[in-house]
Amino acid sequence: MRYLIDTNIVIYYFNGLTADEALHDLLKESFRISVITKIEFLGWGEFSANPALYSQAKAFIRHATLYGLTEEIAEQTIQLRQQFRTKTPDAIIAATALVNGLEVVTRNTDDFSRLGIKTRAVTMKA
Image 1 (tube, rainbow, N blue to C red):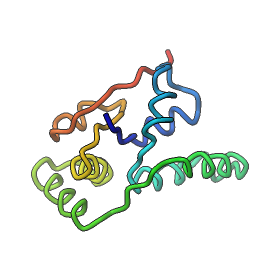
Image 2 (image 1 turned 45 degrees about the horizontal axis):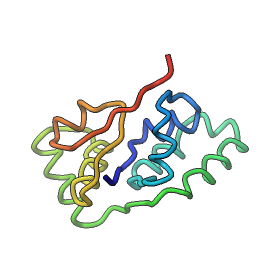
Image 3 (image 1 turned 90 degrees about the vertical axis):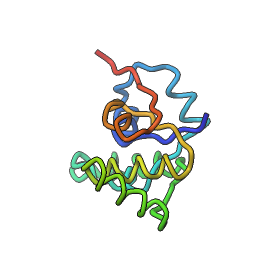
């Protein structure tokens, strides 16, 4: 299976907050993200106060296969927003998954399942 990694998982993994041992292998095999995930992750407020951490984050995210915003993804995003009134970032990630036949790895499985997206949940540290 090919996976698209949701922003929350990228943030949690980068910060060592996941307890799912299989996630490391999954990221080695299928580290795919939407352009919105790159924007959300690198735009995270914690990085503005820590340039060294921001540099580490940029190096980390370079390992990902990045799916840009194509016309087909934009059209699918519009349809999802109209039909489900979902937030734009989630709609872009969902549309990217739909257009490319990917399963979304996320902590928020309900947010994507209601859009008809296959999901895989990740265990978080207690």
